[in-house]
Image (tube, rainbow, N blue to C red; front, side, top):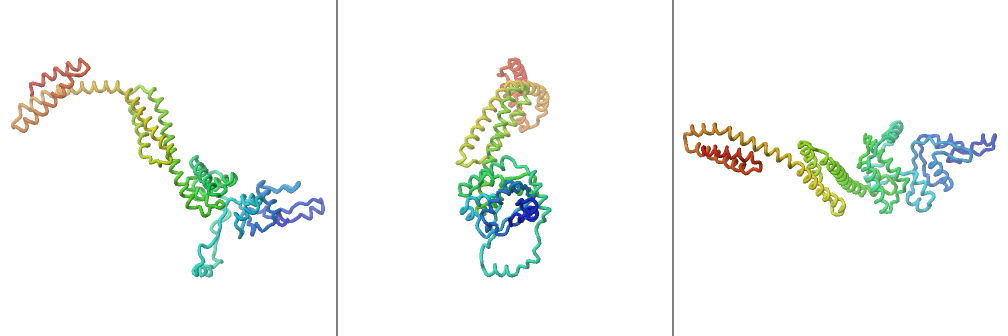
Amino acid sequence: EELFGGIDFKKFDTERTMDFATERSFMAREVAVFEEMFDAPERALMFLKDVLTAEELRNGDQRVTLVNRVLAAATNMSPTEIASANRSVAALIERFPLQWEVKWPSYTADDFTQLFNIEYSDVKPSITWTKIAEMQKKTETVKTGSAVKRILAHVLAELRKDKITISPRTAKKALHLVKAAAVINGRDKAIPEDIRVVKYLPGCQEMHDVILEMIESKKSEFKIHEILNDVDLELEMFLSDIDRLEMMEELEDLQQKLQYQKSRLMPLQIDMELHELASFKTELIRKCGALNDLIEEKLAPFRAIQEQKRREQRITEIEKNKRNMQRQIDQCKNLSQAQQLQTKVEGMLVELENYTRDSNSLLAIRAKGVYDSMRSLE
């Protein structure tokens, strides 16, 4: 009765109905703080648990919706000890998913001196209720990607191994908490670092450093996994592109994209215990090599034609250069110049001689004619 505003005796006198006067209770306030909450009788706590779960008071025919936006409970008792002593009350504690033990790290003379010098009248609120309400509203719109959810799931599962019970109810609150951390840091999308606030979950206060290690470890693992999956998807698309493309420029562009995907794989450092990811990486590198071979096979005819054109152009260039070389020889005045010209001519002759063995008979015949003509320069 005290918890929910007492009995509405006026209604009891007129209608003989035992309803609560909830307008005088915490239910009519946006913010409520329960002092020494768990000193209350168990029956009252069980009633409160039902109200917080349903977000309304259900007392016979009486139905009253909660308007609370923030509920806080202060206690000198350990929530863990309370929960272990009474399973029913433990369920109520879960309705308060954020817990923080306020304690002194030490009890030195300096600590007490600092306590005595505190001027409580100067303490000002660090945030207004209006700002809290505004941030609560923003939290509902925060985006959480799959990586954040997977890392959070891993952290919660690992904490359970350390005997810290994270129920499905608390897990959903934890995700909401991560969103709130993003809002507090001025973002509309959660990032893995926001998961650090899991330390405020029941029993996690002393696990802060361990939680940070879990986040960093999984963040690295999921980043690698994300890259590998992305590369694998790209390679699957490349395979269909190889069959479809018919132009040399398109195939060479695809080959460059393939090299880029391979370059993403090579620097990935994967720990030995992540053997499945390491095997995945090895398979993708092999796949890159196989795709490159397919592209090279399809490029071969194009490159053969391109090479023929290059050789034809080179033979024409050497032939046109003969007259210029002859003039340089006629104007040569010393041994050094003569030797330089001789080296140039010999290089051209070797090049032409190679072309005389070309599989293209017409090109070989033409190269032979230019070769014979250039011999006079030698």
